[in-house]
Each structure stands twice: as structure tokens, then as C-alpha cells.
Length: 353
Image (tube, rainbow, N blue to C red; front, side):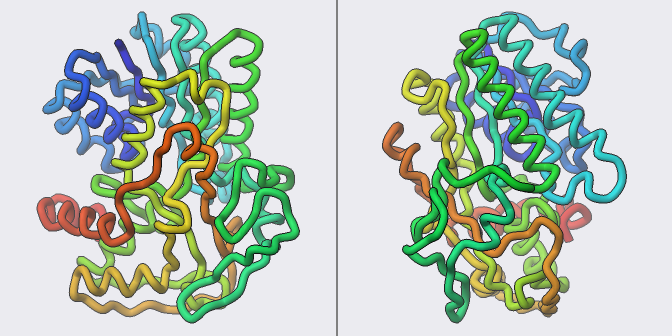
């Protein structure tokens, strides 16, 4: 089997490449990446160490795929992943990467009759609807109520039936457009496809920033003590997300590859669910416990554009197909990140502190 992973030097893509290669030594795993995101170049030695092939290429450029043939599976993990992307300045890179890049990947899959797994995002869901879900404010977090006024929402989180109509950020729009294109290729050309709508993915080797990779950012700012902010929703840090250790995503993709027919042509919410959810305030307390450091955190009450108070993936559908659920809780995630920072402190300090 020959598997192409686009965005293969990124946090998600590189971990998928290495995880699959470690389990399936006879598979050829190819990482395809333009190395634009700072820190992605650090993954090239890791990939080579695990005998993962690397091709320097850009999903925006169709001819860059000409060097690739006889592919069995494409895992499209390439993206401009920031929810703030394109809001200030040009939208070209965002749209060309997240939508046109997907079209190029689909055409490659069609050419070689390859199976196609797309890593989408929870950001395809409607911001106006998410802003108006019913929740209460507890001491440390916002908590969803069981009685909701919208399809696909409950105290267990949000299902795949939650509305996608209305605005959702430019980033979310490019991913939703890609999902629609994938559905067309599935039905018109008989392409075998899976769409995984991922929430907050995290773990070692993620180069966390304010707008993407917040869990690693939070741990890094505690590891090398530096100020943080609770931005929006009163500045109290009670906004909530579920998080998923990247190793748990790899285990799911592995299962999907081996049981493709169970998932073919479908869309799945992927995340830690209610059991692996956390607010920023709770994240602060746990980072303090792990690192032993207490830092200054400033409250900024004003909401940031495209932000939402709470998102938790309801993973009931994927559990029914795969009997899959995350194995690593929040504390295990944080300890893994802490160990990674400790073991490579000198090199990572400039990038993450």
C-alpha cells in the first residue's frame, strides 16, 4: 500500500505518517508538504528516521503531484489552519490551499482510484447558531444545557446534524466548500471518501499559537513563564472546547483504513467529547499543576472575531461505526506535551516561548 499524506510535515500530518509507518513497515508512506509553516522543517529528520519518504511540493500547484504515481490512499491533512486566516490581508493563500488544494488532491485520487480521507474541521458549523446555544455559567466553565432550541445540540455536545448555514469564518468556509466537492467526487466518480470533522487536536510536536494550537501554547507559556490572556466572553476564561490527543486521531484513521466500507461516503465529528473537554480557566490550573509555575493572565472581555463560547463534539456516530473513543484524557495530553518540551527545550524555546 502506498499512502500519500498532504501537509505531511505539519503536526497532524507528520504524526499520522510516523504512526502508520511504525505499525505497517511494509507500507510506503509519503509526506508531501511545502514547509511554509514555521517549525514544519523540524519534522523532516523525524520522518526520515522512520523511513517516511518526503516530497517538497505544494497542494496549490497541480503539477507538483506529477511526481507521484500508483497511490492507494490520500490523507489530506494540508491546510491553512487558523480561524483568523484571511481576515486581515489577502484571502488568496487560504482559498488556494484549503479549497483549490483539495480539488488537486481529489483529481489525483480520481486518477489513481485512490481512497480519500479528508481532515475537515468543526469550524464548518454556523457561528450564529453556536453563539445562541443554551448554556449556564459554572465556577470554572460554560456548560451546555440538555434542552436546546436547535437540531444537533444537547448537553453531550454537537452532532453532524448541527446547522452549517450562516457564516462560519473564512477558514471554515473553505473547509465546508471542500466537503461539498468531496461529496460530488464520491457520487459522480465513485471515489471512496471519508470526511473527519476534527475539533482541537493537540499533543507533542505541535507549534502552538494564539489562533491555532492553544493547548500547546498554554503549556509552553507556563513552561517558560510568560503572560497570557483570557480573550472574550467577559475575560473569565470559561469558554470550553473538547480536545483530542493526536495519537487518538491516528488510531481512528488506522481503523478507518482497515474498515473503509464502514465509513465510506460519510461525515464524522471527531474529538475528545464531553469527557475530554476543558475551559481555559481549567487549563490554566492544570498547567500550573504540571509545570509548577504560575503566570500572569490578563482578562480581555471583548470577543475576538469568529470566536464562540463553547464547542464539544458529540462523537456518537463515529463510536457506533468504530467502537472508537479517546484513550487519553486532558492530564495525559498535558503531561505528554510537558515531556516533549522538557526533552527538546533548547530548540523549542525560540519557537514556542
